[in-house]
Amino acid sequence: MRRASILALSTAIAAIAFAAHAAPAAKAPAPAADPTVAQPGWKAPKTAWGAPDFGGYWSNATMTPLTRNPRLTQKGALSAQEAKGLEKAFADALEEADRPTDQKKGPGNVTDKDSAEAKLVAIRPDFAAAGGDVGGYNTFWIDPGAHIMEVNGEYRSSIITTENGQPPARKTGAPRAPGFPRDSYDSYEVRGLGDRCIMGFGRNAGPPMLPNGYYNNSYYFIQTPETVAIQVELVHDMRIVRINGQHRTDGVRTYMGDSIGHYEGNTLVVETTNMLENQNFMGSWKNLKVTERFTRVSPTRINYQFQIEDPDIWDKPWGGEYDFYPLKGIVYEYACHEGNYALPAILAGARRKEKEAAEAVNKPKAGAD
Image (tube, rainbow, N blue to C red; front, side):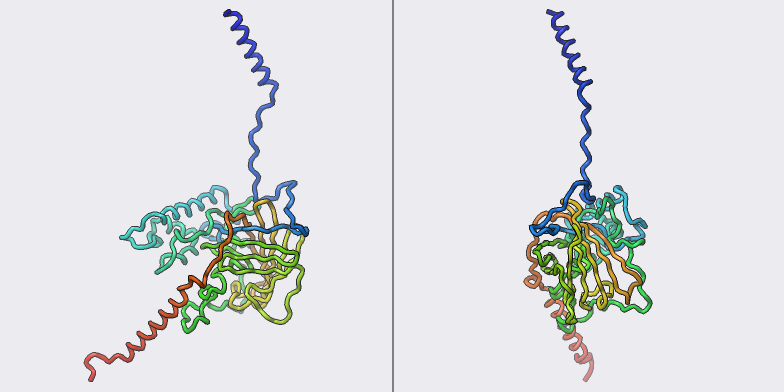
């Protein structure tokens, strides 16, 4: 009995050894394909009429700023470790902002140099504009995305793709942008487009279309054979691109300019001119031409490139690049007018201040007859 058991065990061991020798070694799972890089054999989806299909809900929210922060890096691309470090800085600031406010310190922690939010502002100085002031937002209220923008397998340090990540030098004597009428309170007509709920306060609608760094960086792309319509979340703008159209010649300038487009393979090419002065881009509007390229590079990415041209301001064209990625959800109505208490409050405050100043001038001095 014992001999039979030993024989059976030996046979089983030999079988296992033979199987292990004969069977090929199990392969390690292949790394996931980078969605920002076009993969061999992948074909972009097409519409029923044969155009590349961009339809659906997309986002361009990103921690990557428009211009490079030279105090952070001089490089155009960050390492994965550097990118994750920046993403953690935002995550830490957001976690801190979620905690109950320390009543001794007052609302907001931007002025606390040891706070996570202050460290985030050191990385992204533009975030300071949204917080640290009366009624300003702290990190809890902003939603710039939680990740550094990855394009073609690289973590980008800026959206602008010039060598130093900054706009090129302006020509001597080039016209300057009209200032935002922050200190003009005579009428609603002198307030900014954002105050009046006419356009978003960032450049989400464009062109160029840019994430605003704060929130509402969502879009809905709708296509027909004759047009591409882009619904912009902030503030419910609808941008219309006329496919195979011609620029208008009547001299009329419109919000978001006059956009015409055509297809080059899997790319939608859009050219925009006739911008309004109060929607200028870095001071350029009269002779501004923006050329945009939307390209499907994977099932989950649309590569977006823009080129800026204005011979009155810059010596040569320049531009930038980022990727759209799928939005988890849909774009809801941004009912700006319905909830816009800012504009009447701004004007009412100005009238109150004028009244108080007039009363102070006409008030009799103490001791006067």
